[in-house]
Image 1 (cartoon, rainbow, N blue to C red):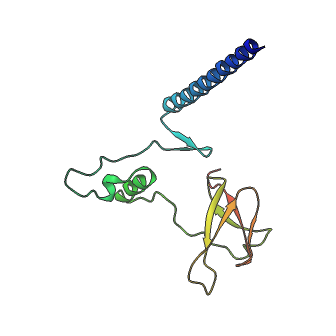
Image 2: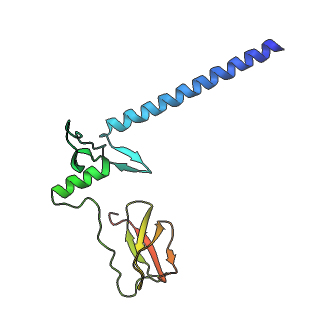
Length: 153
C-alpha cells in the first residue's frame, strides 16, 4: 500500500513539473510571436508601441525629462518636441439637445472604458467618472448621459 501511494505521489509531481514546463514554453512562444510580429506588445486587449527608453543621464550631471523618461511619457515628449500632440486633450463639445438617454454625449475612445471629467456649474474642480462601452452612463450631479464611441470605426 505504501509503495503504491509513493508511486502515485511521484506521478503527481512529474505531472505538475510537466505542466509548469508546458506553461513556461507557452509563455516563451507567445513572447517570440509578439517579437516576430513587429515588436508590439499587447496589454488589456489592445496593441501598444514597443518600449521606448532614453540613454539616461550623463555621468556627473542631473538628467532632464527627455533623457530619463520612458514609455508613453517619452513618446509624448518626443511628439511635443516635433510640435505634435501624443494625447488628445481636446474637450468634448456638447451639441444642443445632447445629454439625454436617447441622445447621450458621445465620448471618443478606442478602449472599452474611459475616465471622464466634468466641471459642474458653480464648482471649482472636476467630477470624475468611468464611462464603459457597454451602456449609457448617467451622471446625476449634472443630469447628463454619456456614451463611448470609437472614432476610428
